[in-house]
Image 1 (cartoon, one colour):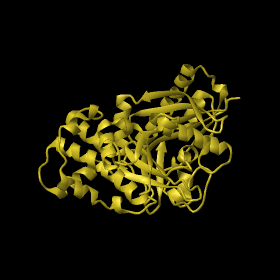
Image 2 (cartoon, helix red, strand yellow):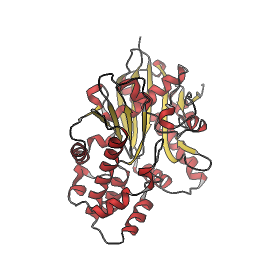
Image 3 (spheres, one colour):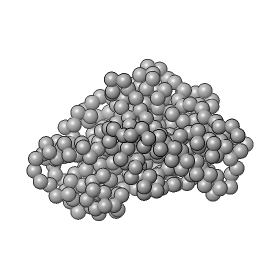
Image 4 (cartoon, one colour):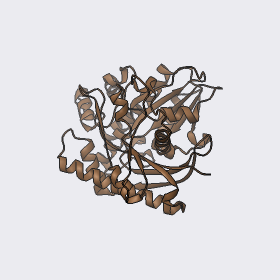
Length: 372
């Protein structure tokens, strides 16, 4: 008999909500239906304003928390209608929410995700597991990345050393050694799409670099790239995590000011492609030099220019997407949060202290159910 959970994920790319129905009745989870809900333009603009500024009115924070909760519920209901599966068959929804600020290095470490789980439950009639990151931070961890535990369960092999590379707004890696007694490690490598999207929107007025045209039209400015790569984050040892509140427009302005010379906008876009590529490949070369196979997921897996650059930098290793192992790259993270909800109900830890730096394993998430 099927054991259905729903996973909801809205990531650092700030483009919309990925939703999946996952069946956990077999040893490996099976995605049985998926749905993507783009953010309405006004909501996306407000979320970007919230994420890219250190101060915000509490009324705006509360309003967006409510709106995102309602949109998440609507997304679930559309997914169920499309799949022709009744809400009564869903055990729980695992909702990541939208990260609006992530500060594990703060004097008082914290992370904030919005998307009111009470509203999701109220409008779907389904229990919701949410607020996954704060339990790990309470245990002394980074609260991120959380998906490596799912990567271990689904992509580790005793035949070869693998690395999973997830490229969303921020990029992260999970190192999966073939020796199953070795610790799983992983961390955020730095910007994925976030600076690329920021720069093309600023100069072209579009949400992302369609077919990498803007990036391909420019040339890498090596001196500017070296200034970017000299940022302390890249040399900081793991465990570490970051977000668009760090790799932001202000970060870009500071690096350009440091460089001190005019650079064509297209050349900066080309340089940002190289920044994402080099920060990912350096992380793999330094932390997992014995890697044999690289599995790509996240929206960046569809960016042909990034894939070309990564393939050139990582020549000699097999590179493919997670689709080769049963989960399309767009749905890996949403599936992971369905899995974390499943773990919560099974009273299983969802974090990996070897990844996040937490003092111990913890069950992640809180339970929300508005009974009618």
